[in-house]
Structures are given as structure tokens and as C-alpha cells.
Image 1 (cartoon, rainbow, N blue to C red):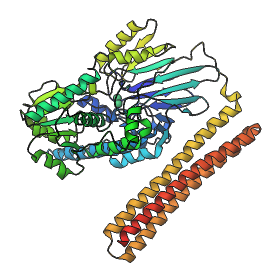
Image 2 (image 1 turned 90 degrees about the vertical axis):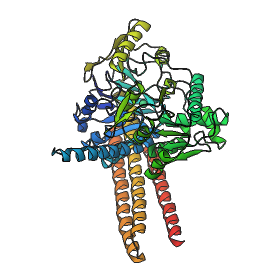
Image 3 (image 1 turned 90 degrees about the horizontal axis):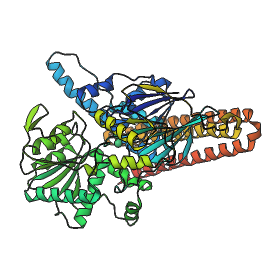
Image 4 (image 1 turned 120 degrees about the vertical axis):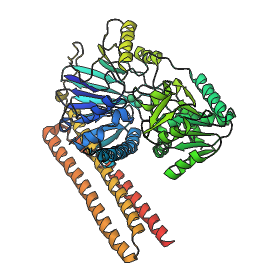
Length: 604
Ligand SMILES: [Zn+2]
Ligand SMILES: [Zn+2]
């Protein structure tokens, strides 16, 4: 069995681990490298493996440094499933197209310069269109549910308490007699973060991959964090300046909103306009509101009482570019939350250009700033920085509050590591700057003696042996187990088809709206509508037919292989079929209600 560290080794970004079990190949995460030019060039280098030969991707969470290369990966011919929690699926479905759009824009900008210099043009890493490919592969799973990938591999997603939907992944691989347990920590959250539940303690592992972003640092405690935030808000408002907070669209933005809401309620900060200026963060905030199943008790009770923890009077969301520009023309104090979190792209750059030279303004960092990013240079005290080809002087106040980090600090990582009752035989320290990972590796070795702790190098691969002690029953000798795993695979396929139908419905809806807007005569509109509807329906029927055919094939194969399981197989197959029928019915119902409201609108 071979484990390769294709990314996220001796660097924070680009998480990408390949596990070749001999019984199937899987990736954990497929993230984008972010930071210095050298690092970002690695995104273009191509993968260390052929995406066509990978069977599954298990995605720990939606952050781009874990998911951001999936569009390229899928475009290169991956045809398996990408498994992630349901909230992660929703978040990824908005984050990746946005990332594709950013790549397109940046390439346009770059090509403009290249044309002037007579250089050849370059193409984007991937486009928004490529990003849409990923959606088709996504399969949403529940926390704590055991998923049989095939007869030899099973996985379980556990809450990592890092961002909405974030997970640690437990993975078991068996060769029939022995079994080995992997734990991929993903990004580990802090305890007592607002909205989210605390990360899960995992009792056992043979092989552990542990993140080390803050492996050598300690964060301020949660109380200090809110009082620091209050002080920085008050000082900036007193000076009449603007407080600019670069924040990741997912996670940090919602946390900052949550605390601003709290401080306002407690009257610890004055009423000030708060602008949430990032279309993506606005969409992400909507997804937060749609997934109360991920909330902790406090957020859940607020939610059930009808009080959204992410909404307050004075909060202005700006989707349109024009509204965004107007924020900087506005006189007087304000709070501006905008993306990207490391200031590499997005609207935040405009806000920085306006506010960095102003003594009365403040830039407040609440997230990790990777080496080589614009955010890191500002935070480290540069006297000027380049933004859009202009040299901008920095005269404003610069602060950072580490406690907003969605990552556990050194002590919290050790506390989680202590949760293992069965000490892992091998530990690999990943997802950290090189010096931090190396130091954290030493800390882990001192902390628990006798564990083999390694800090893998980029692209390094290691061979893993099955543990000598564990013995499990041979899967193939249990027909019921293998039957269950075959049917589980089938169930996921069917689920995916149902989503295909939902996508077709959505596409049809968009087309209809487009038709309605661009067509003047009613006859023409009806003709167009008929064509669109016909196409969509055909696509949907095809999807369902394919799914049923493959379910039927699996069924007859299972019955032939295991005649003794006849009853169970039939019962399970019917269960899967009815489950999927319900999803299809829901999709049709959605279509019907959309149609009705569309027609009502035309009637008015
Ligand atoms: Zn993350
Ligand atoms: Zn990460």
C-alpha cells in the first residue's frame, strides 16, 4: 500500500494525498497551491497521477486549498465520485465556479499585458465552466455514517469543527485478513467556535496525517478576542476611519458577523454601517443559514427562536460592483468585510487601495496569511505594496487577531492528539509552513514517545504495511457484507442521477427565464419554451433510465452470486428505488412550482 504526499507537505496549501490501496485508489483533497509565484506555478504542473485512474476523492472541506484543483482534475477525465458532507457539497458548488471566474479574469488581465509586449497568450488554470464539471461527481454524505467504498475500503466523515461541513476522515482498508485504519485530520477547528460544533475526538488510528498550520503558536482566548475586536472597532470609529477586514468568504466572514452582532447587542460598539462586500460571502452566508444540522446548540436555539445569528440592523450586503464602489465614496466611519482573505484577489484589493494610505483607517487580519501573499506583506509591516500596478503607501493601522483563526493552535492540536487511546504507529505532519511542520513534528515526538513522527517532503511517497496485530474477517466470506457494499455503490450512483435531474430542472428554469426576457412575441416564447422543455425532459428521462438499468444489472448479478441473500437483496433494492423515486418526485415538484410561479408572473 502506498501513500503519496502530492501537496500540502511542508506547505500550508495544495492539500492532496494519494492512497493506493491495491484495492482501489483514492485521493484525500485536491487543493490549490496558494502563495508565492513558485508555489502557484505548481498548480499548472499537472498531477502526479492520471485522474482517470483514481476511483474516489474524499473531500475534507470546501476551502480552496483543499478543493481548488478539482475542476482541472475532473476535466482531465476523472470519472469517479467525490464524497463530502452535504454542506461541503453546497459550499464547493459555489466556491469553485467563483474560483474559475477569478482565474479567467486574472488571465484576461495577464494577456492584456502580454499582448502589449508581443508575448504569446496564456489560458486560465480552469474556467467557471470547468468548475461546473465537479458538481456532477459530488456525492453528499452524513457525518458519522459509514460508507463502504467497495468491499475493501470504508470511510467515515467526522466533524472537524473548522468551517461549515468540515470533516476529518477515518478510513479503513482491509486485505481480507488484516485491517489498517487511517485518520486524515483535514483542518482542525478550535473548540467553542461560534455556530459550529466542536471537533470530534477520534480514539484510534494506525496511520495519522495531522495538520500543523499553527503547530508552534498559541491563540488569544475567546474573551480576549471579542474585547480586542471591540477595541479596534471603537478606535477606528472614533478616528472616523474605515475598518477593513479581509476575510475568507466561508467561515471567517460568518464568525466576524456573529461577533459584531453580539457586540452590537451588548452595546459595546456603536451602531455603524457594516458592509459585507463579497458576492461569494453573501452566498456562503445563505448556505450557512440553510444547514442548521451543522450548528452547535447555541446557534441552533437562536435559529429555532427565529433570530439569525448572522444578521443584524445596519448590515448591508453588496452584490453589485457599483454598490461596492460606492462604499469607498462614502464619508465617515464604516466596517467593510470583503474577500479574499489573503488579499490576493477580489474586491478587497480595491478597499485596501483606498484605505492603506489613510491614517484614520485600519486593516484587521482575522485569518492565516500565507507566505508570499499581499496580506502577509501588509501584516508583516511593509511600508508600501503594489496593488493593480500602483505602489500604495501604507499609513493606516494594521492589526491582526489570531484567535479568529478557524485552526486549532499548538495546545489544541496536542489536546486532540491526546484523544487517541490507541496511539498511531505512524504520524505524518502536514499542512504547515516548513519550519512550523518540522518543529511541530519534534513537539509531537517529545509529547508521546515511541511514535514514528515524520514530516514528508513534497511528492514523497511511503509504503505502508498492514499492522501485525489486527485481524478482521475476510470480507468476501460474508456475502451479506459484499452485497451491502455493492448496493451502497449503487445507491450513490442513483443519488447522483437524481441530482442530475435536479440540475436539468434548474437549467431548464434558467433557460425559460432567458427566453422570457429576450423574446417579444408570445408565440415565439412558447415555441422556445417547448424546445427547452423537451430537451430537459429527454435529458432527465435518460438519466433515470440509465440509473435504473444499472441498478437492475447489479441486482441480477447479486442474485446470481448470492442466491441465499435473495430476500435481503430485493428488500434493499426496493428501498434504494423508493428513496430515489422520492428525490425525483421532489425534483418534479420543484419544477412544477417554479413553472406555476413563472406563469403567474407572466400573467401579472
Ligand atoms: Zn480550511
Ligand atoms: Zn487548509
